[in-house]
Length: 425
Ligand SMILES: Cc1cc2nc3c(=O)[nH]c(=O)nc-3n(C[C@H](O)[C@H](O)[C@H](O)COP(=O)(O)OP(=O)(O)OC[C@H]3O[C@@H](n4cnc5c(N)ncnc54)[C@H](O)[C@@H]3O)c2cc1C
Image (cartoon, rainbow, N blue to C red; front, side, top):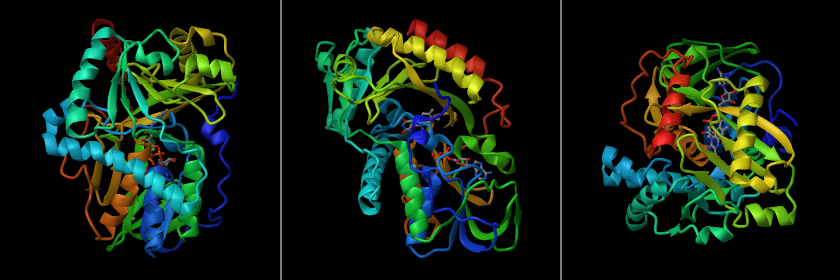
């Protein structure tokens, strides 16, 4: 078994980076080469702006190269809950922003010729308990009527042709949802940004920043650049020089396994519907098939703020037991990959984007970020160049998490709380 992301291991190497010292004067410096940063950099470069991307490690090193591979449409929250918080119109706009995100990805794939196995697969939200089916059905009624008619409720019997498991009591199907190879997409997006003229420096962590009158001087171990505007796209991996954001983002580990490729008979017995699947527990699981028919199976597993080989291995063992619980027929299947990544949680699990602490930013996608991150990159590029403001998260207040200064010491308590909820609800 490799302790390595399947997406990163099976993606082509990024070839468009700029070697040598980090120097020069740019209209915009983007910090972080994940979907958010690269989505912005590509668009800014396409518009003829001088743009540099500074990435601490390598393209797609963060959550963008380590996730579950789902492009699930709509908001991850209950739509009814969002309506209660923000009102019907705002909740619908938020839901639709995620749908537009998938369209953005589809357009970028076509425009830039990115081969990444994109497919409108549809998503199943699987009810892990009978009572969950009822609450999913209530949410479905509102979604179907008000914002997304391309949805359906499936009974337990309907699931027979979808998921080869007895563990579920029905599901909501959201047909607009998609899947893709995340590693191939993030590298393809970086190559596209570089082709349009973005300068991309890997292994260039921004360690300090200093105002220079008009913008910022950003320091990396490879040199210093001058930028009129800075776009912070560092998500859960945000480090020291940006304390304002570290107090608002809680990094939470999420973990995945990829089995060996399944045979056609095993696919037919486990995932005949070949959709993205998410279970309804608070500490639940998400899974899909890879392009080469591996079961990619993830979950929060443990409430940890770490993802390294030791932490990933512990979580991998928990995930393997969960996989066997859902698919007993795969209890002994070989696991080829085990990895983890950090999710950029906000307290209410809604993203935040705008301008604060002297920089532009977009982050806090809370585990539902692949398409919205890419889409927000484009939206923020337009906002930074004064073209148009389509920021769906504008004006949502964002207070620091009380007692949080970067290391989320409270995660085990939160984990215990959600485990209890899963027992009683
Ligand atoms: C395990 C896991 C599973 C997930 N599954 C899904 C899923 O199936 N579907 C979905 O929609 N979303 C999923 N997500 C969420 C999704 O992957 C993220 O929301 C999205 O990738 C965020 O992209 P980003 O560009 O904002 O951040 P990232 O991809 O995390 O990129 C941030 C980058 O900033 C760099 N950086 C940090 N600090 C500095 C610095 N000081 N200087 C320079 N560079 C710096 C980091 O090295 C990193 O490369 C998952 C996340 C995880 C961790």
